[in-house]
Image 1 (cartoon, helix red, strand yellow):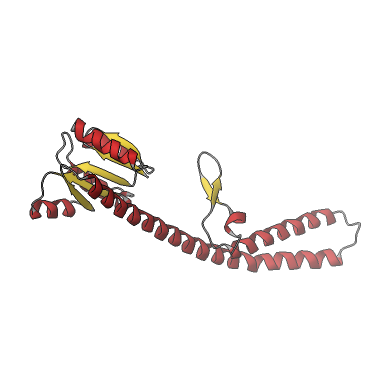
Image 2 (image 1 turned 60 degrees about the horizontal axis):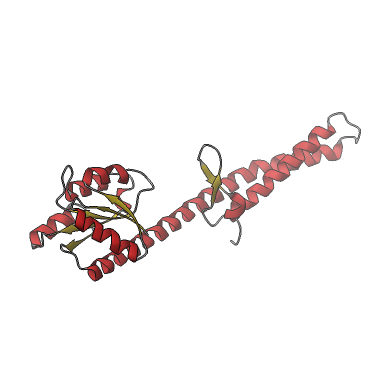
Length: 220
């Protein structure tokens, strides 16, 4: 998992990095809260962060409060690392937006266990987000398919009727044939839209992703 650490003490920072790497995580290392703030504003920032409480420029609790105000801030799992272990301090840290805390000097086994909890929470969040995406997409695609299908039926039916009545050598017959083929293609797309049950995207242009109708409508 990609984890960000913000710790101004060089020894503590290195110990954190060594342990996280040993447990198989990739680590984004920041030397203070201000540096971490710059990194965490990005939408693709790490979703699990370990913040020292006492840091220059921007302390851990102030950073917590800022993060919770970001559009994606509620998805970030925050562990506060602190030498403050009084009940009032813990309450203050959690009230600022932290999800958990670890006392300094940290015990590696305890830290690993708390990170695992954070991972489970993030995985659950991701599953819930995916389920909601699928639900919204399914409803929207189904509604759009229903609305498109009604006028499309009229177009297809009218085209077929006109072609049945017109002579084979009529000048505009090929245009009607092209219209019928286009309507049939639209009809196939509408059927796929009605079968969409999962959120699948594909690259479009300029970094924009669009729904991959073929992939999203498979295995439904």
